[in-house]
Image (tube, rainbow, N blue to C red; front, top):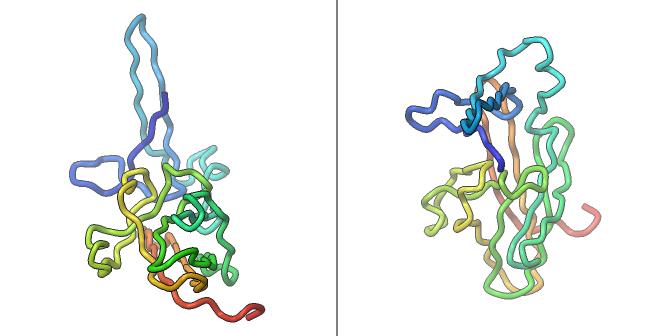
Length: 173
C-alpha cells in the first residue's frame, strides 16, 4: 500500500504544504491495529534540508494522444526561469490533447482547471492524480509543430504554474 500526504489547500486541510516541504511519517503497529500519522517538519530542522527539492529542480514530462500518452522529457528553458518546453508534432487534425507530469510519475500530473472544456481556464491544477479525465487541447493541422511551455516557481509561499503553447520556432532557433 502507498500513502500520500495531501498538501493542497482545501477547506479543513491542516497539512497544507508547498513542493519541497518535508513531513515526518510514523507507522505504528499494535497487534492487529495499524496507525499512520504525519507532521510537517519545521524549516531548518535538523535533517530536513537534504530532502528539499525546489520545484524547478524536478524534471517535467509531457504525454498526450499524439504518442499514446507515453511520457517524453521536456527541455529546460533559460537558467533559473522555471520554464520547460516541448515541441509537439500533431499526428492528425484537428489536434491532440496532453498533460504535464513531474518526475515521470503520473500521480504528479498537471492538468487544466474546471473551465477547460471552453478553453478559457487559466488555472493549472496538480501535481496530483485527480485529473485523469481532463487535459489541454492543441488545435491544428496534421504535421503542425506546436511548442508547449510549462513554467513553475515556488516563492514567498506561492506555487505559481502556467501552461501555454504557440507555433514552434523554426529549427535551430
